[in-house]
Length: 163
Image 1 (cartoon, rainbow, N blue to C red):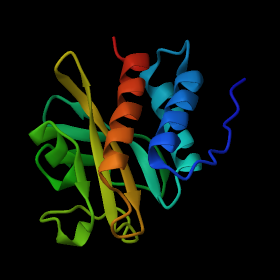
Image 2 (image 1 turned 90 degrees about the horizontal axis):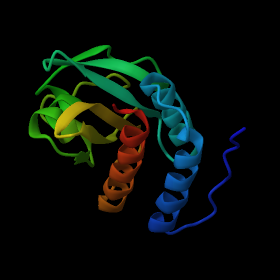
Image 3 (image 1 turned 120 degrees about the horizontal axis):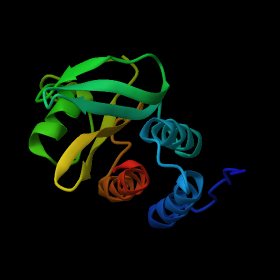
Image 4 (image 1 turned 180 degrees about the horizontal axis):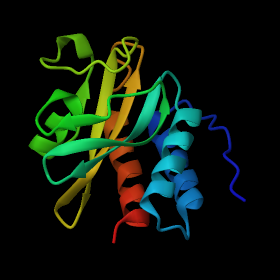
């Protein structure tokens, strides 16, 4: 059985390398996208400092994101493509890092404590499946190293789960 190991590294690149290795081991041999999303969200919530929400939204009918497995407070269930940070990431087809959500026009506040956000699209064969979303109560919590690290995490999830 998989057992998460504390990551002691203070360098972000080392942290994300170890996190990616743990996620790969956790998802190995499992193809179910919901089970893998649940375990990915749980691992991220457990291992990442200063986050208050980690989870997935899945794209339905190309028009809206629907809440998937997550860790944190209850969240918005449906987000139209093009709205909020998650919907904008889908519409623009790339990751979005927001240092201060109060400065993002149209931000959808599911948890008033969230102050920064990082959203990474889940892409397979040129098709967007949804997004991986991380929130933090700290302004400026995420930077470009986090974006690169989480894009790697999203790719591991997609490789393990997508047909």
